[in-house]
Image 1 (cartoon, rainbow over the protein chains, first blue to last red):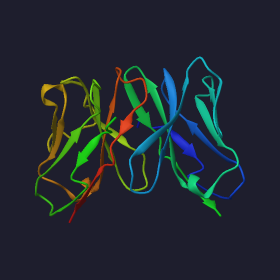
Image 2: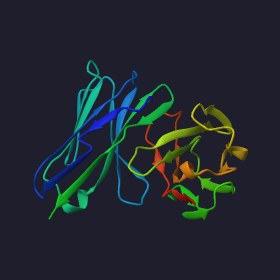
Image 3: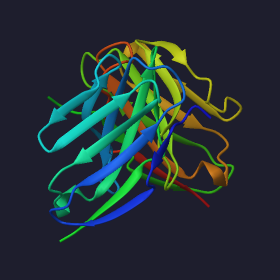
Length: 109
Length: 114
């Protein structure tokens, strides 16, 4: 399978805490993206990091990329109950975008 | 700007029946994707169109699944005959570029095969 892996598969934290999700991929990439999916909804793009970048920030999101280890991490700081969702990394190599299995985040109020 | 539209949102059929899903991408988006998402898993790419040409359909079960994108705009995904394992959400997405940028997803079509 071309799909990468994410860990943890599920994460439960208290509101205000930080959440870190990791992603590993198998193929070479042009960029790596993170998406969010609320239950029963489509995926929403969060952030894109290019293969020549090592870190990127957007609001409460921080993404890192280590191409030598073929891995990325997503950090959500000061989490809120509304952050409860599934988070997917997607690696884009050439013209294809391949999604990982996702991390299910539950933020308790 | 209108988002990606999909219909129907929900469909329940018996195995061996047929079903079709429709997708209208964001206006002007050249690339259109169909993903299959089984409960608890990540989306799996079934087919990718660039305008009205197929870029990748390596994971499309061609004995039962077919897809077309007439005139490079709307797309239809058909399953005939359906199997129990086809129960999933079928997600349509589009992007402005050639497949390396942000994807915009529709809400999905949830298929239950009994």
